[in-house]
Image (cartoon, rainbow, N blue to C red; front, side, top):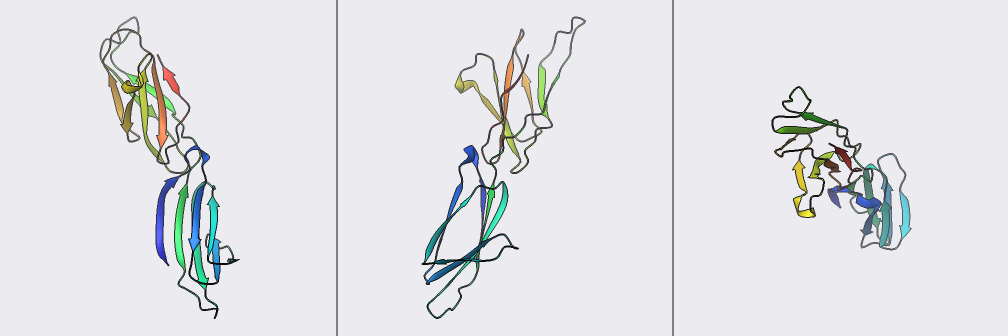
Length: 171
């Protein structure tokens, strides 16, 4: 009985396993408000959730006299879709040869995620070690790169379920 909402799941397309346990003879459950209840004999059943978005499970049990327990509710938010980086925007002062003469500020415009939303993004310079990869929390944050010469930068967006976009880059 009661009500609970779980955080985002779905990274790497792993389904969420929800086990319903009761003390009665039968379990009745449904997924989402408009569905009809399904009866399961016994006092335990497991459901697999792998549909993107929010799924709410309603469940109750009955005893041998058909007395019904209170209806419990569990909401599972599932996201198995990779986010998208969008446009990489570079700004800074350039000379007449189109070479940056100041620190370069980089932002990722139009990062999108259809379900859980953007958590942030990873960025790194070409040739960097894994320890040099930086994470920027938030959707609208910029990065200032202070380095001489031509550099290639890489980006990956991360959503709140932990899914990562394809790698994007700019020189």
